[in-house]
Image 1 (cartoon, rainbow, N blue to C red):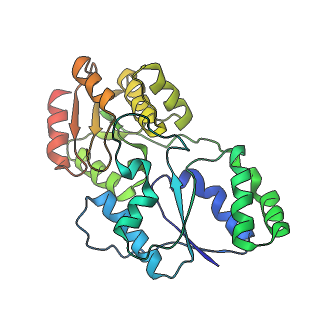
Image 2: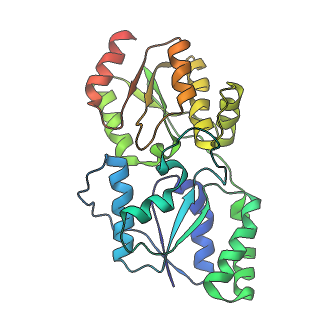
Amino acid sequence: MRVGVIDGWLSDRYLPFWEPYLRELEVEVVHPEETPLELPFPGPIRRLLSQVYRLKNQDVDYLLLPDVQLGQEAQKGSPSPWLVGLGATLERLVPGLPPVLVVPAERSSEVAGLAAQIGQSLTQNPMLARRALERTKRLLNASFTPPKQAGTHLIGLVAQPMLLSDTVWLQNLQAGLAEHNLALFLADKAPTELRQDGAHLELGLELPTDLEAAGMHRYLSRLGKVKGLLYVHDADYLPLPTPLRRLLKKAPPPKPWRMVGLEPPWEQVAGELAHHL
């Protein structure tokens, strides 16, 4: 039995449990080969799709995918299918996609029941599944370690959280900022805290990732050491929630800020921010 896992797209939040658990089930965990494919999509989406294509070609039996909304469904608006239906979206784009196993994109004790079900389904051995869960369930106790960040002239980033898992994208952004002696700063709060911050804005947001992005805005716009803000919005793939964008027009943050797409000329954007610091 071979289960493919993707790197990025919040994998750091759920794989610390699922990868050891699958190995305890005597399941082979397969990471994608790193060779990128040329696909007509923005970089973060292209890298995600490349991983899925690679895993399919590596003959995995199942593909483990995150539910980034933690079971929450949008009752209004038209959120991007990349945010609310990743499995269905990939099935439309990747012919012959292996069967998917969808798991919450975070760790908590509530995940144990789902893990037991998946373990029994994969192994057809309840005893093995129970033993594997006993050995790894401690990993469901998630802890948050703030990222190590340094520098002056800090620029805070507000975006859908899965974008912050794309190291290539972040490196390109950091390089552009560095050209103007600016440094990137990511919100150093746990996702649950950011969602609480987002809820305090009372924007009527439903989805966890939207609340998290709104929480980044609320926290970073008030943080004194952050001198400027960068909002990343892509209507087709990774949009910021509409109520947040309306708030920015009505009550912009009290520091220089810019809203850009997924792949702007970073050095030019950085230059515009630096000019107003």
